[in-house]
Amino acid sequence: MQFTAASWLRGATAVTAVFLGMLVPAAQAAGPARRPNVVATISIIGDWAKNVGGDDIELTTLVGPDGDPHEYEPVPADSITLSKADVIFENGLGLEHWLDKLYSSAGAKAARVVLSNGVAVRHVPESEGSRPNGKDDDRDPHVWQNLKDAAVMVSNMRDALVKADPAHAQAYIARAAAYIKQLDELDAKVMKDIHTIPEARRKLVTSHDAFGYFGQRYGMNVSRSALESVTTEAADPSARQIADVVEQIKASGVPVIFLENIQNPKLINQIASEAGVKVGPPLYSDALGKPGTDGDTYIHMMLYNDNVLTKALKQ
Image (cartoon, rainbow, N blue to C red; front, side, top):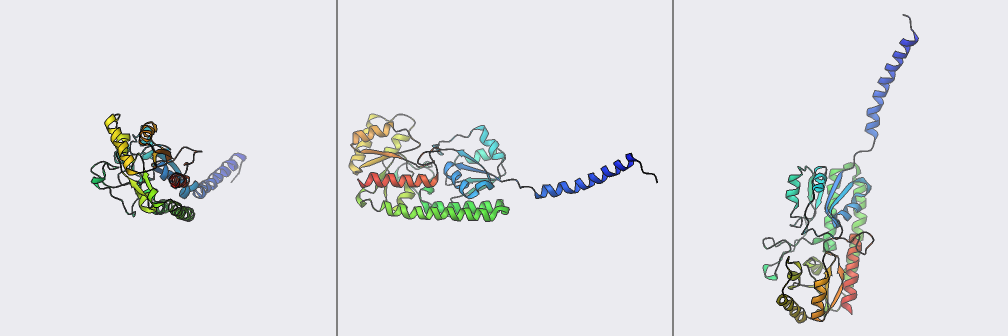
C-alpha cells in the first residue's frame, strides 16, 4: 500500500478529530457548573441571600431599597426574571400578595421557598384596628423585626440552597453559620440596649404597624393609634381626623413618634407639632435603605433602629 502526503494528512486529521472529540466532553464536564438563578422578593431577603449565597448564586431582588412590598406593582421585567429563576425566596404571611399572579403569568417553574415557615406568627386582633394584610388576614408578616426570627428564616434559606445546589453545600452552610452568629450577637445587643430605656418610656408609635415582632421580642409597647390610618389613606385626611390623632397621641404620653423610610414625613411632622411631641429619625421597617445609607444591609438596619430608639426614648 502506497502512502502519499495527502493520504497521510487525511489520516492525521481523522485521528486528531477523534482525539479532540474525546477531549471536549471532558473539558465541558470539568468546567464550572451554572450558578442557580435566585430571586428574592424584598431587599431584606436579598441581603440575606447575598450573605448565604455569596458568589455561588445569581441574585435578583424584585422590591429594592426604600420600596414598599405592600404597595408593589410588578413590572414586565419581573415576569422574565421569574421565568428564568431556579429558586424564589419569599417572606410569606401575605406580604407578597402580588406574587401568586406574577408567578403564574410568568409560567415560572422555580421552587418557591417561604422563609417564615417555622416562625411563631403574630396575629393582629380586629379590635386593634387596621391589619397589615387587610381586614380578612390577621397575620403580621413583619417577622424580620425579631432577630431570632430572622435567624430561622436564614436557616430555611440555607437548607433550600443546599437542596438546589448540593455541589456548594458546605459553602452555604459555612456562610449561614457565620451570618447567624452575627444575628445572635446583635439580638443580645438590642435586648440589652432597649432595656436601658426606662420602662415607662418604652413606647413606640409609628405611622405603620411594622414593629409588633420587635415589641414582643425586646419588651416595647408598640401603640396602634389612628396615626397609621391617616398616613396610609389614599385621600388626604380631614381636619377632624388629624385632630383626633393629635388627641390620641397627647393622651398616650409618648415623647417621640417615628416615621419610616418608606413614607413621606410631611403629615407626621404636622401631627407631631400639634401634639407637642418630637419626631424621631426615620426607622427602617419594610425595606433596606439605599447603598451608603445607615440601613443599607439588614444588620445595619437593625443596628440603626436600635440606636435611634435607644437615644430618642432615654432622653
